[in-house]
Image (cartoon, rainbow, N blue to C red; front, side, top):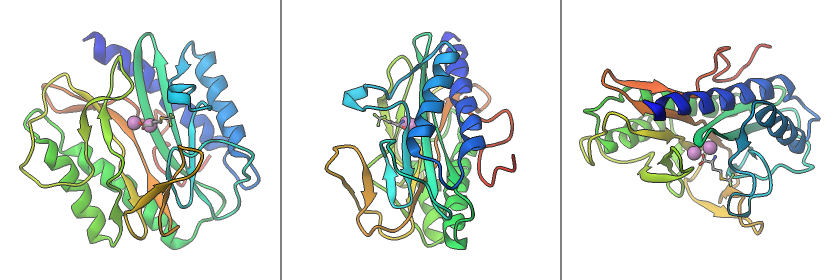
Length: 253
Ligand code: MF3
Ligand code: CO
Ligand code: CO
């Protein structure tokens, strides 16, 4: 399939960009330095960053730290010891998109922050592992919500995963909450993202005056991971996995 072949290439470049990010995230770095790395890495690989100028977004990746839920804009902010930060990269290569994000530890975060990050990654992977052509859309959200709430955290409802392909964001919406056994069945050939945002406190969010940055209303921590996946005859394929095993922190490199 052309769609799978090309998404595999775009997804791999996006994953490799995050492998590079893992090398530079440490106390004292600016989020704009992460953006520069992403811009350069993507361009050096003959691809384009999809976020750059997307609906007026000014940078090549999103950097969302601590209570920022998603869509943080890279700037002169200095990351400090104990922060957690999500970096979200979307590559456009040869007409197709690959979209992925990971959390990074800046120095040594608190036990609670690390537990939130671990729970968020596990919730995404649990949802991915149930994927096949018989899975219903509601099963994805239900898998994530059940697991996350059992751990005492909450699922953000204001943002969701999405179909992806020649278009960055397309049908269907992939909700990260919901009920098992509801919604349409997945189909072979479907490509979409799963990108749960999980809050330490309440699930409620608000957008800052820059029109992009989404934060938790209670200013408590938020974490997110994202993979682009495809439904196959046998089950699923993850297009954005790290070939270096750097899918979730701590990254010992
Ligand atoms: N990469 C984000 C997603 O997962 C979208 C970012 S849009 C931007 O869908 F404009 F904020 F970059
Ligand atoms: Co993304
Ligand atoms: Co996405």
